[in-house]
Length: 265
Ligand SMILES: NC(=O)c1ccc[n+]([C@@H]2O[C@H](COP(=O)([O-])OP(=O)(O)OC[C@H]3O[C@@H](n4cnc5c(N)ncnc54)[C@H](O)[C@@H]3O)[C@@H](O)[C@H]2O)c1
Image (cartoon, rainbow, N blue to C red):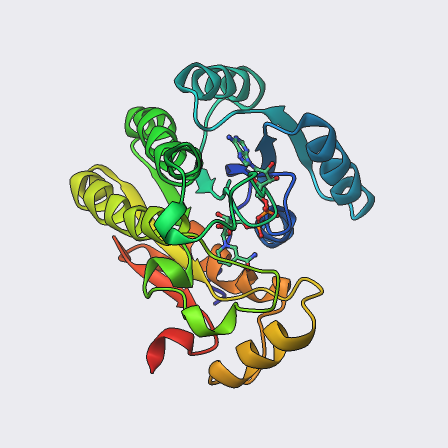
């Protein structure tokens, strides 16, 4: 007898932040188990390019516009997805205001960190995930089943280690860490509210993903991580499939930490 706990045949998955580094990895993982993929981003050009790249690997994906900070934008996305696919089974709240987004004052010191930048980061990372849970989750409630995965961060579990940044040109502002702690709290709140209605909500916490990091930052990071290296971008795939599929049918409000041990010591 074969039991395919991870089967996602014909499940419809929305992945926000579709134009970024990790969304395509989530898409590759879900698609390998049969899911149909919608990559959503407010950067339409980059999102279309990401979908073109996936199609070259025979991955069934479409690109859609969504500004995760805007309620109307989520509603339009949902209505487009319902007319094209008829349902939504999986939502990955993955869009992030990261150090790739780099607002003008992203690197400002805490003492001078501008309110505008705080609001911009909180809006994408936390309000975006709230709206996604609310609007797509409401549809899942009608269907009686769904899996929501909120992408948090190691800095949603612990504070950034302030000693690794000086002299590297990289920084992690307060709003990033606070918003990601909020994502974990949001996950527990919605998960416990909806678990008995067939909707499972969990968080997935990546550690530092290698993206051509160099020099001092890379050396310090490797030394501080028990596994001795940064994560490869492919190393979240197992966790994504697990949380999206019935393999995790009794897993509710969990934060699956995939960080090489960073938060373990
Ligand atoms: N890369 C890492 O090392 C790492 C580590 C921990 C957590 N994470 C989290 O994983 C997720 C994905 O990270 P990534 O490395 O792919 O980030 P990335 O910066 O490469 O991609 C983020 C994407 O979100 C999109 N986005 C930003 N604002 C948006 C908005 N208002 N509406 C819609 N889309 C918007 C951007 O256009 C971009 O395509 C993020 O939530 C990030 O915080 C990443």
